[in-house]
Amino acid sequence: MSVALVLVVVMALVVPFLLWVLIDQETSNPTVVDRTEAERIAKDRGGQQSSTDRTADDDDERDEYRSF
Image (tube, rainbow, N blue to C red; front, side, top):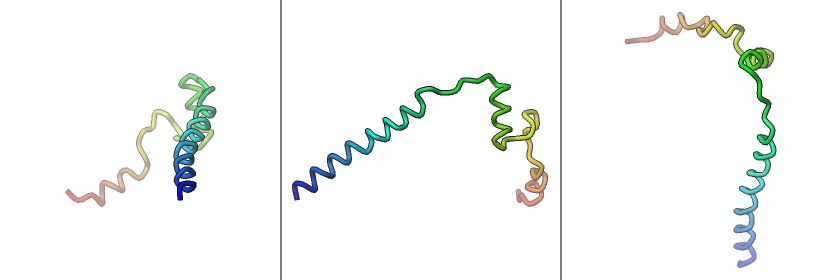
């Protein structure tokens, strides 16, 4: 019984520590880019087609079905 309790306590301490280490390693050297480069990367990854177009094509359709 006491062995199980010790294992639970150890796991409760080890798991958050391992998560912290993994997140710290992943975020330790972030890529810093300017806005233009960030927008280009976002478009390459499937983001919006234009940074000036903030509306979706189906906005008008949603207004038709909205009840006030």
